[in-house]
Image (cartoon, rainbow, N blue to C red; front, side, top):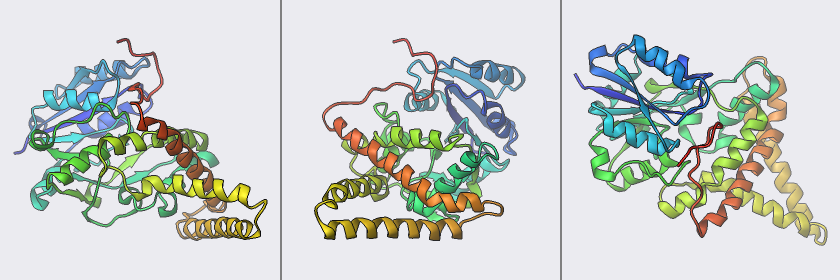
Length: 341
């Protein structure tokens, strides 16, 4: 039996950590062939207390300290400490089906891939309008492009998967996580796997439930913050970012050029109006096609909300151009007390 190590980076995850850990402890996989390493980034809420409470009642849960407070450092700490032949990156925001570990091992063996993962079912935090708007945007091809783990249930080889299950030996071939990257570290690692001739596989058998930003304002903040890392990530590895990551910035540049030009040029005005009308109509096509029962209010607002999302995302990418010249701060992304050096 293949020994499996779950590595879960956390920092201030008290709202979701218990449900996430319970889903891992409830795996069908034999308890003696599985361990759960929770790598805590100096949480200042009740996360560590909850983990300790769970650890006392379950010997396969281990708690490790992450002084840096960031995900790539946590993953590297966990990988080095792990006993498993398979490393599964877990997340304190996810809830896992009971056959998740078994399916990770199965698909690594059957496909010959070096990393396997599954789609996310993005859940609303509650029934409020803003909370329901978030998964509608993040689950739509119009919102997130060809990000297959967010929009597709098709099975096959892909460029990246969220988190993933790795053969531990792959880290000897391509190296560990890049600790310069507070964001996009999974994309960059998967790019190195592809460059080394490795393969990445996506299967619905590894579908998990994911809790994103709690409301629309939180989503815009997330988009702006995350996208600032794209340019620096490209500096680190040119293969790590795709067209979908840069498309909002290119769209925003087009709007910024056309808007002032439209005051002096009828052609520019017509092009601007045509661009925005095409955008909104396309948005309605996807929002109405993907509408779920009872979500008519979300479907009618979604195209305009997606525009705001893309503008925030594109603005972050453009702000990130400053990282062509220096390295961004490697501060934790979760709120809380500052990490002491």
